[in-house]
Amino acid sequence: MANSPLTKSFPTPHARPLSAICSTLNSVTHLPDLSSITSDAHVESVARYFGGNGYKADEATKKRICQCIRSASQRVTPRATYTLFPISRTLPGGKIVLEDGETLKLPECFSDSGACVVAAAIGTLGERLENYCRELAGCGKIYESTLFDAIGTAFLDLLSDRLCSTLEDIGRDIGLAGGDRFAPGIDGYPLEQQHQLFQMADSASVGVRLNSSAIMMPAKSISFFMILTKTPHRHSGKDKCMICRLAHCQYRATGPKNNSKK
Image (cartoon, rainbow, N blue to C red; front, side, top):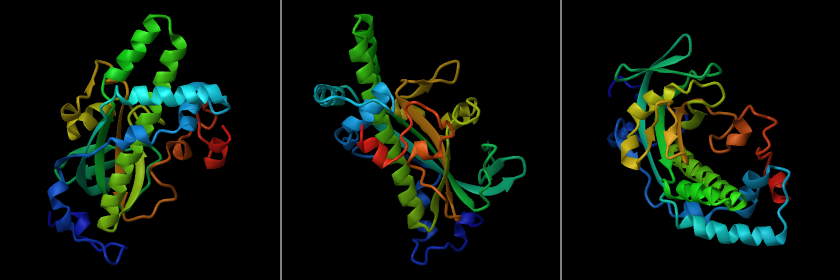
């Protein structure tokens, strides 16, 4: 690791040395205790995914959502894993070279000259909730199926937040900031990159696989790359709506004030 860019000086004066995280570089790490993923779900976030960002749930619906959140929490098994890879150098044309020599394609808009580490992350809620949604739909209970699916999406958001927060904390410990996050199939980043991501992260240990079209199964799963960088960024990796280019998405969360009115 002697030639790693991580051994260079960092902007945080009291950052821990590289040796403090050496054991996690190129090693699979699982997030412990993800039980709060379900208990932290809010009625407002579920309502947004259920009816769009203009939907206003009445009191009866809010009560029903709370009941369904409790029911859905018994049908998920949140799991998440990540692996950190030191970056050797950035190449022209939107690519980075990792220390092991592997090359990773980057989004077209990527322009971070301070990138030092890339994380490959995968998380999932498991299969039970989506199977339950399928059963409800098969019985003609479309309303209930849609509501439980919206709850699953809200759970998945919280799981993504936990993963990003964990990676940002790791970066902070060594004087790096959380940088760009990019996911296969999102914002123009090729879906085919899913195969490389799954080779870099331990997908099998969390029970996630790819079908022949590179779609994750179970469906209520997430995967992404995240950069840890010496360059402070203008945004946090947590809020997907603030960095998403789908400005007119009906499920877009435009900010805390907007969400609080729903």
